[in-house]
Picture 1: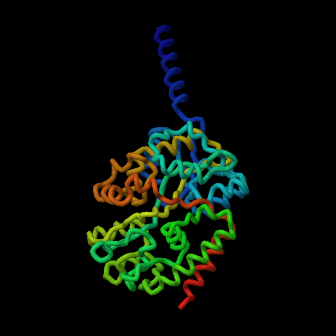
Picture 2 (picture 1 turned 90 degrees about the vertical axis):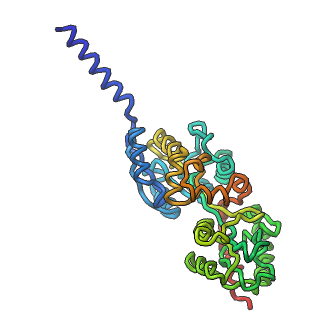
Length: 357
């Protein structure tokens, strides 16, 4: 009897010991992120696999910076800022900590996105982010009407006069600059040279005004202009082109020959994160191909997960395979951090273009 009791005691101790080892030391992971970036189905799956309970706070870039500044990098274990909102706030406020990439499965991340984010979040020799989600701005073309439009500068071709539309926003200045042989991002730290570039773009866009049917302001307006045939070519996001392609196969998204413009939202770890193990586990989990594909199938944004395309719904997979294959991603011009004063300079240029007759 005593032997049976002893065996039972030992077995019970082993069971509780195993459970204790399996449970994470800190079971709560606090994530501040954008709406839609943390589907409940994936959160439940992550908790079932790891034991971490994820507490989500929805936010945006400005709020993330504000909240983390107020706590000096505390209050959250993981954040999802855009890559162009990281290096400058690290230099000013030190609210994020460097990423230890050895703790991640880098093999599942698209190398062009990973390298771009490492480069654009580099501070004092260390990088501060991991890519998660991206979106691009390129061209939406009616190929039956404007087959020769291959780059932003082609929107100014006189033969398409009155059949073109784009926004009077900073992406137009930058995209047009790349298509004309400039590298606007390389001039960001040189205000005088950047102003000369803007002066040239002002002349180019004013000279091209006869080509423009209208400057579009919102996505619905853009879609209607292309649907109706009033506009044959426009600068726009990939989602707009793919939506229209589903309605009319002659219309599609095209990455410009000089490279599409693109933003990236990332994973960054706050300076006073209290759950590093959970943060790195969450990053790896969300970039696992089948999980990243679940997100993209729902939200239609691109993902940094290299092999997620193999798990996409057929229509969405066809869009990415056709419009943003690896060779196109490799040529993308990723938005870096915008230095203070640049957007004000761009705004003055755009105001002059708008006012010109």
